[in-house]
Length: 262
Image (cartoon, rainbow, N blue to C red; front, side, top):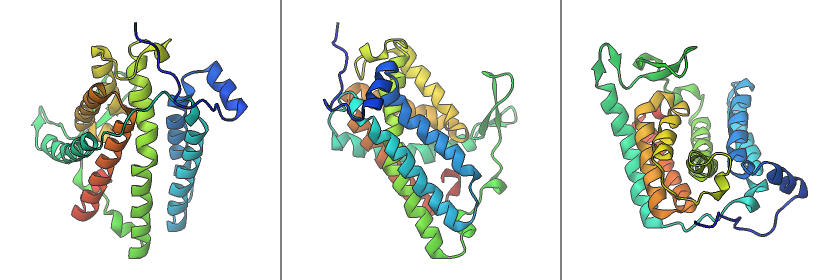
């Protein structure tokens, strides 16, 4: 039987963090993502003027980034970056996200457009697909009074997407969920990159909760990322891959003004 993954750093950090992790081993991998989501919902209540929109992203990065740094000494070994894998797979994932979504939008079955948004009703886990209305896609650039305000927003959002987001999401999805689906109560005994069909398919399907508007390509992208993780067994590689994907996707969005992906 393989030995469980042990933390990469010997310094446990603040004592209260060490006690929290001892009581709940899931915190180092789940915590940053949970804080990220909580702050994302919280900033929805801030004023919607330009200054506050910029400030909200900065506060989001600082708050979730601080939570991430607090538990970094309790992460398992993250592996190597494997730059060649990250660039190739990251760019392919960005292309697949856009091309796949537009392809699904071209398919309608029984009056349901496959590129629509999943709607989770009271009968969950049963879901419906609501067709995408192009009229509801906002021109993000038009929401800002000056080009300077717009580009500040673009830079801040891309910064968050290529720094904070890949870390918190990969810690949660590949670092925790893939292992928890194999052994929930003792996930830490499961080696990083250990394959299981339930984990592979289940985590991919679960990703639609995070991306209901792009549910089809979300499943495909998660399968791609899961497959890369099984090959490399490296969270660093997946973090970098995720960052490349987000950077390429947002560059495309800004250049093509395809705002549905923003």
